[in-house]
Length: 147
Image 1 (cartoon, rainbow, N blue to C red):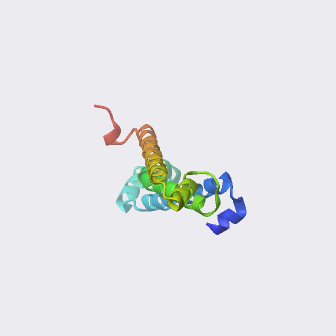
Image 2 (cartoon, rainbow, N blue to C red; image 1 turned 90 degrees about the vertical axis):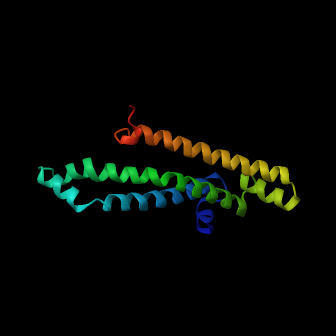
Image 3 (cartoon, helix red, strand yellow; image 1 turned 180 degrees about the vertical axis):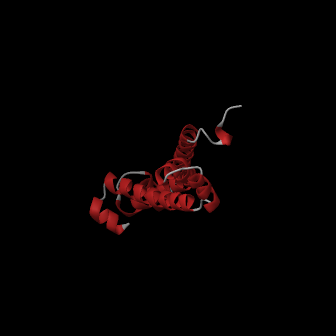
């Protein structure tokens, strides 16, 4: 956190960098695990049917990794919101994090609860948007096919 604040300053750039940093590593690790967790028999079957390395990557590995990435997005969104609020705790004069700190210091329970409810609504809306994107991107999966 201090390094990001040092590089990007106290403005919006540091909050964006914090959220991108958190989301990238959560999703990257999950995607990597999804791509490497494919059964060897599936890869061997694809090669046996004449699939090249590129065809295997394009038709088997990447779709598997994308599925795992979308699985990580709700967790990553929650972590990103927490990261941004914590970043605002440390040095931002505006934002929900600073409102939370100010309301805690002044004892204003209404401001504190409104800030928490706004964060919860933002998190729920972002997770909902990710679910819609998942349905659009992973339309080939059985759970997203329309009957």
